[in-house]
Image (cartoon, rainbow, N blue to C red; front, top):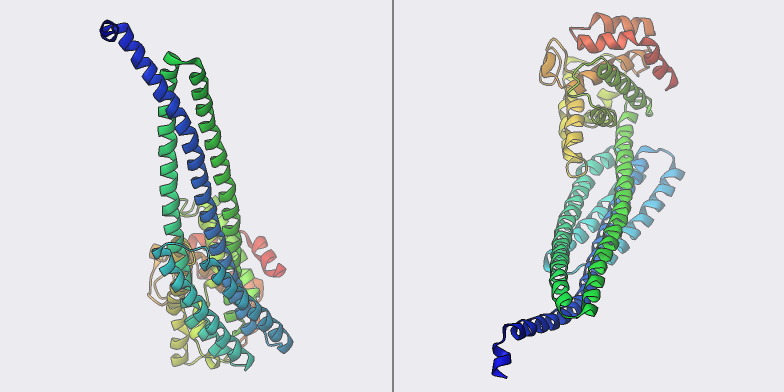
Length: 450
């Protein structure tokens, strides 16, 4: 017996048998663990998707509620105000129910703390919205407008910050789970290959079992990747819906402000059309090709309606004055440019991408700057004026010339184009003015269509 124990072949056989036993045991352990890994990972995906869905639905309802509130202020028809108020109240109740339901899915100290802030801010937002609706019902649209941007928007911004922070924590948890799953898969794959080698030396059956486990690892990984891809597509669809709601809300706010000046959305549509045409022509001509990309032009057209948002601070007696403004009144009117840039940054921060905020702020603050430096609010000149504001300046002045205002009649196209030509190089960027004049038929088509 001692001789057999000391025999190298016997020792190798014992090692192989032991290895085979360990391999067989390892295979069955891996089989059970893979099921456990798969279940845990699927559970994490489900929780992550559930949180994303609640946050997306909350954001969608909030921006829809804000849009309805803005429309309530903007309309003068009592019947429409009543319908909008009813719709806003129903949305408010739905928001409360959604926030409460969201809380039932939250676990963990950090998430619970953020959720309490989110819950509190949502209730405060709804209370503020009710105040705006009450003021609007009483006919005090001016105070309601100030309350909309001064009280509701900060709550909306804070709610966005809460959801973004919640999303970061959720993403971090999901990333940790993904890494853990990847690590488990890697370990499982490595162990299965070791077991395969051991089983080949010991038992063919165990080798077949090991191959089976390896195939199951790949199958589970493919299933999980497909599930993640499906969930990501649904989240992307929700995000696009929210972006559409945000865009409509911004245009609604701009239309509300424009209506104080006697317009009903026509100026916004026409200037956006001129901006899109002129930016596209400048890109085709190779002018500032490093700036005028397709994405930049898309954001610029989206930002164009915000150019006169600063007029919300101008009193009605000045904004609607039929005659010429006094020096003091004109100085007050000029304040709308700088205030517009500030309002854009205050309202959009945390809601839109920073690139879009910068473009919208430049358009609002600097569309009254002049090429020769005699404009306002900062007296910028030449290339120091942001390109977006130079494009907006041509569109805004031209539309102001050919449109009727409370203080003037519309100017004929010939006279308006003559002014653009005369002021090229003094008021306007000469290259942009040249392109605008060269494509007069397209410009007139936009004006007549609107």
